[in-house]
Length: 255
Image (cartoon, rainbow, N blue to C red; front, side):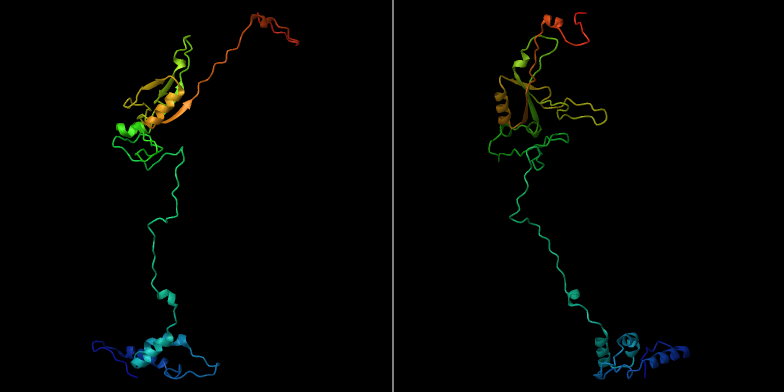
């Protein structure tokens, strides 16, 4: 057995003895290398030993024998592991998927934003770009989205407690300043509200509730109607203070 080493490599006596002892361990006759395996099932070939000593066999075997040894020693691998895998993601949406429409009480976050919109501006509940069935007058007039997204209140004013007149209670009023906050800028520290509002202190009076609703729908405003509280007047009689009560405890209301 001969081992081919580079010329620049110098081996001492100890290294030569180690190489000779390693080569003497591997014997091709023991593992039936280059021979047809026996047909008897009792005799088996020790393939793990071949893998262990295949490093030393390369030095003494020919290229054909070494190639055959490697082919027999390598365990078969699954074909699926070597196949390339492709991962695809579809960007487009299927045609049968219908996007969910926001409900009437949910704001539409896809509404176009006007240049005058600020961070404290309300979000419109519907898109007002001319595609709706009823064309709002606010689009033609060029009003900013600050007014289009505001919610107005239609109500009747209450009678003041210190006055006997009821003139204000006869008219229906549209007010933009919705309590507790009318979409004005508010100081985050102190809670002060600014007067920089398009409709600060603005209100419109109407003769009837239907006229106010028609005006709000024409302008494209979000509105709600607050019905007035009717006063309950109880008739009083002085004789009721002297009514007989069949109870043990008698309450005299005149005292």
